[in-house]
Image 1 (cartoon, rainbow, N blue to C red):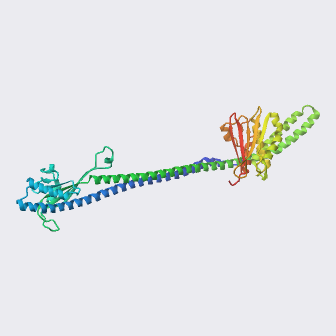
Image 2 (image 1 turned 30 degrees about the vertical axis):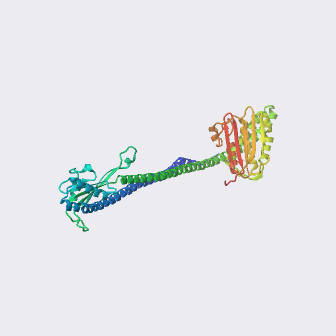
Length: 494
């Protein structure tokens, strides 16, 4: 007898293909996360750069406008002082002497009238002969020497110029930090006014106009802070949205990877079972015919022994019993290897359960099993192959009986489910129960925790239920019994 075994070479590539598919998906998603976070960093840097450019541009515009304002004010001051003070003083006294309290007071009145409401911090007039302050709206500066610097020299040469003295940054907005300081000093030649559009008169000194821009600079720094805070807030929101998208994408990718692995495992399991089924079918076919011959021979031998040696017929009966048991095993193998497609017709599950109760009544009585039925009277009929579903119920009940060596209770309950014409069947026993490890493998072909049995009964039962478009689940605890739940009537496309 020669049996050709199926090819199992496809199983060798299983792990490699799974790793390749998972690695490819995770690598693609890693690139997505990399580019996403890189784009976020670029946007953040661009936002900060834009903030810096806008604040610097605002600061530049402020300085240019303040410088133009100070120079225009200094020229107007030059004209007004020359017309209201220099000319009248020269006419009256013959010369200008600011050391004279009368002249100094008159000049001070004129300057203060001109600067009133002009947001000018101070006005000082340097002598043209030496670097000394001859007049200032701040009395403590009068008489100080060599405080003009290079700006004073440029103004003596006829060039108006300005210098900015400032100290301030975002750190100055912190509590306890020093205040923002910004002062613009403008130096303009003090000339004789000849009424021309351009100042061409003799330089009589240098006018220093000091304008306090601290509040303006503080406003710009505050604007810079608000722009930066707004940018960071927007970036934070974008980062939060991006993170949520990445996390959701990661979860979706993981779910798809799990689903892909599940489908791959299901496919490989199907291929494995198909190959195993071919082998089992071949072996069972080769065993079935010789087994039938052995049984027939044993029955004939038993008849002859009863005549030749009465009282020894049990030897032949043992052979017949064992061949019957082996024949049952072979039939299970064939049912597993060549599952029959169900021939469906609308029928009542309750009828099958009542039939089962009548058939198993002697066994229940012998094993001291209390069989209880809780059957719904409004249970709808469902499309099913009655003989196959009966086989499923019989397998589960037999398993329940085998789990209760000292007797117990088996309860079968039926009830309709709310979604459509769907019914549920619960078969519960008070047996020894199962561990979680056992429950995970209970429907695996050839798995059994009994001393005898093929381990195909529940696997065949699940195949039958799934071919009906239904489902079968189990819940159990060690020492607390086991409950099988079968749902029938589901749409095969759902």
